[in-house]
Image (cartoon, rainbow over all chains, first blue to last red; front, side):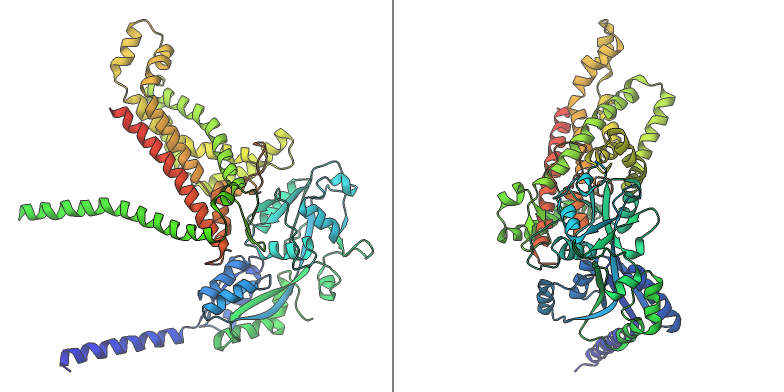
Length: 286
Length: 288
């Protein structure tokens, strides 16, 4: 080997080694996904970073689907999701050598809300399904005013949308064919739904319990005609009495390791679960 | 040496010129490659003329007629509002207004063009939407009409500035001739200037509409995004652009939903390409 070649070779080698070292010693975690969980993740990240200076956790939203597709394409370490991963997504992940590993980190009740002027106080899941699929189109049919029902839904990239469709419209029947009425307005955020409900007497919508405010009225929900109507409160979600609640999930590539494991452990610790409650979600254990 | 320098500069400019065409072709090829993959799942006829858009169901229903009609309705509404006002404004600036007001108007219109569309959308959401709802007594103000009004504001600057240019470039002798023959000012504008500048004005309108049909952010915020076939302008609609923007994040790369969004991109590309070519044809006809 000529001396110049030797120098070039050693230079290349040391550079590669340098890159490898830099890659393995990076101590940052990328979290992406569910808009519902952005505030919660952000609170976790801030508390965690306070305790572990030097570690860095970055949180972005975009929707559960966005989070899972980023995990599959390898651009995030943890995907937040307010729905279960789909078979199709697992299949695509496997093709790319990613093994999604699911961890439940909290619970969320979905509140069904109407304008405070609306006299309706309670509905069954069956009635909700009829409203959101468009079978019932006037509040009169439910004993309310003679007013057209305006259906508000989240966009299809929202885990809340998917969960509500599967568990209210299709009543948990996985092979169900029910869809949101084509006339349903697709709102870009939960806040947009809250704002429209506050000003529109005919509107009905749904969102995570964290968004409940006095400007909207929450509907008490019953499983069917015979059971009691239940208010969406933290207690009722923990006991499982409230019928529309869902798990908040995170997905990692394989079992969490090293830094990701440290952060996941923090989420599940007593302190982490207190943060869950502070951000208006429901802890997995009390 | 001088010649060599000249040669290099000439070639550099040639390359810059070709680059833009090259990029357009690359983008179009990419769109085609990703969009045509949809044909494995659905026939073009069903994709374009089917009525159900349920992209994440099993099996997915990817039919975009409601979206196409939604885009067309919003664009049509915006055209009805912006063409008379825009052309009227151009006539006023070019022919009627005193020079001092003319400068203020021109500056104002340029400012209108500078407002980001998300800001217009936000303003529309908090002011226009409740207003539309109360005036027409309809269940919600998130309608095609709200979108049309907001988009008319966006098309206006393009229409006004290009139409004004067209009117300005009509030879002065035309107008003077008409006036000398005893025509009033309005008759001269209506009978002589407008026909003489008509191809330029038409091009202005087409370019303005091209901007409207490609607009995304504002329509996503104020048209309600319901994928139904609209029967009136007071109904919520979902446009092609808003659909791509709202769903791109969800679509898993390589799924039929992902390909469908690219196919929507092809439809949009074709529509705005046609609009631009028509505008171009008319602009060039003027010069002959």
